[in-house]
Length: 210
Image (cartoon, rainbow, N blue to C red):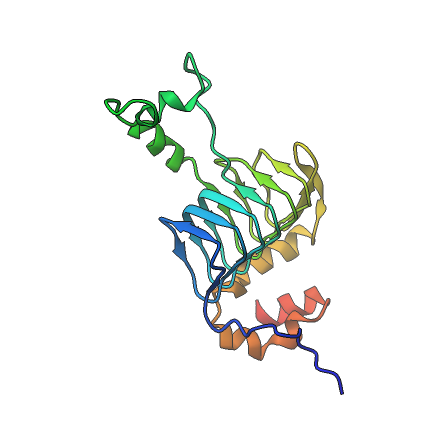
């Protein structure tokens, strides 16, 4: 009999952060996984979400049970295009002169322009999500997409810039799933109902748990 578990795969009973990850001013939920060379700054990461290697996330809120592939960039910061120069000497002048003072208001505005990722979102390899964008629950961002506008729940988008591809489910099913909000269930309950999650009969899932 062959084991169905991956070889040397640890049980994620608590949050796992690779030693090369850089975490600053972040709140990390329970049972998350953050892989090698990923950097988080001013981020809220929901329970059971995971990020692949070489991701950079700044000024963002990420929901629960999100699957984020490698080399994803969320909240890529904007430069001040309305100023005579867009260079960082205008907001980080202390890098170049010991007498200069950082422009804290600029950084306050940048922090307020957060990207918000819903629950159970799948973000493919190499996706870029710009500041201020909101991605709804259950959405899929196809590999390589540059997401410049809000994404509706349970839709699939892709391309540069990202455009609507199709709905994952009917709007009725999508609304039922959002109403069920299974990501807020105790994890023990989710595991008890695992066979329902492994079934493609989404109508039966919604009818049983609505």
